[in-house]
Length: 125
Image (cartoon, rainbow, N blue to C red; front, side, top):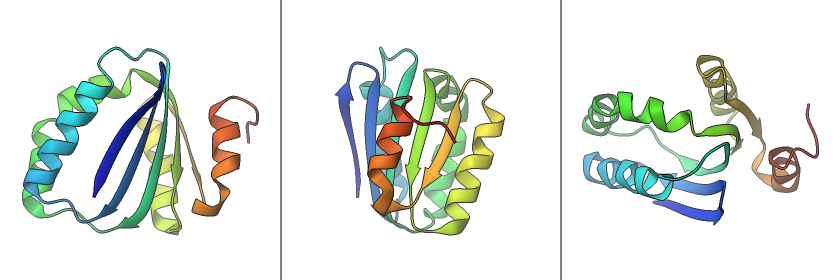
């Protein structure tokens, strides 16, 4: 399951659960591009409910669209990732090192309020 919602002029919330196959990956990427088309200096809240590695064909689709996804990431300044998996927290924050304009911080799923405050600039750690 993948859901994206524009919650403010400069913010999107993404919810993901389960395993993405090639068709669901294609739809998810299309939806992200369409939903974020006019965002500048944006914020993203990414809630990883139950993560499973995508299928090999889904990963191929993601890599094929990598140039456009890199451009999309430039639209955002901050991203908060909610996850209970320690390795996803680590990878999410390391990913932020590849995007100098994007600060990524991971939070346990039960700390949504802290993630919201951090996204709003109310708390930097």
